[in-house]
Length: 270
Image 1 (tube, rainbow, N blue to C red):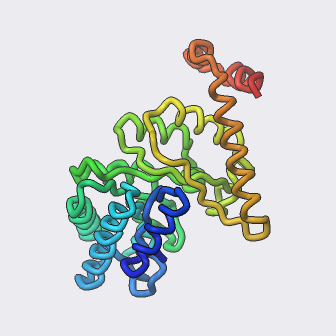
Image 2: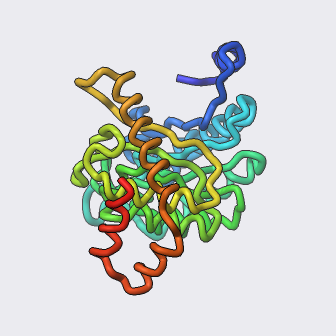
């Protein structure tokens, strides 16, 4: 893992290879001490440790010129009814986000949402929740990470999510992958939800997003490099397709909400 001890080595390695760091993640999910919560923990010592970890991650992100720190609070949530005090923990969570965001305003703090796992119910469980929290902090450097697979798990339309977040200038980070909607399978991009991923790419192309298109895939049985290559090929193909779309034609069809004609039109460009 990236930390204070190896950050100079990583910085040099990136420079020597002409690479840029897209984003830094803070690990608030793998350490057993956070099993019952991190930023929402009612244990002051654990909560402070989680906040301090996050601040350090923001500083490392700035040092490595990433400009953004991704926050997925995987252990913040609950498993059973009456397990936590929702009111108290929402307050703790927002207060923690404000403290982290204000620690280094030069770095963007991006909230990654996920429906469940490892908890049965995650605190940031939807794009709407993440968007609300970004506004609740009152900090302009707090936004949202859209993991395509997580959006599918939430039964969302990823394209609609992109349009909404872009409207409020809160689309900060993207993780691209695919799944069957019932679990976070992290499959190759476009392997299951081709049409919805294509629509996602279409709205992304219309948006003001200028960040990276990140891959978050776990090819357990496939060749890892080839799975990345296949995903990139699919993304590039979809980018080429959406550039063929005549906005006037599509908007005319959409004004009539004619779903079949819209599908026929897009299909003719494949």
